[in-house]
Image (cartoon, rainbow, N blue to C red; front, side):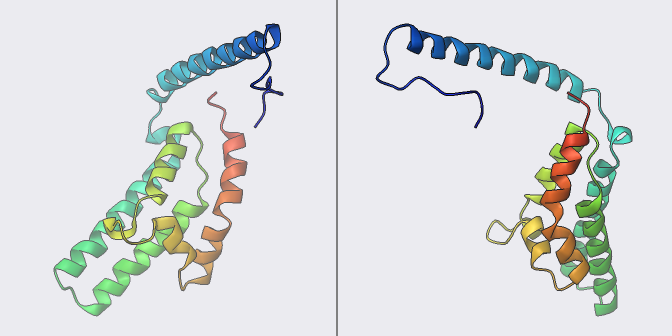
Length: 156
């Protein structure tokens, strides 16, 4: 954590008041930044960030797999649907977000439980356990790439 040292709890007088004043200033600055950020987020669209469309395509592919399972489609169709979902998941994991709204969509999607099963792993955890080496490698290096992408977002 940053922000400098805090006054010990047993300190009295001006030092404690100064620490409280610093926290109040920091709190007001954070509130101002967040209010400006939420106004800015309202103006962003999928045109501003390709990851939004990639996530939507992956969700559609997952829905197609789920629908195929319920409809008891043949094995070939199911394998094709699963390969498509995996290929799109690879794109989700390797397409950097360009905006805060894209970052939010990406993180919310990857934190969803696979097949909407609360007992199962999240989409990201499932990718880390994938049998496909490329998908597993993309999942394992996702957070490092995401850290770089966050630094590049200029919507502050």
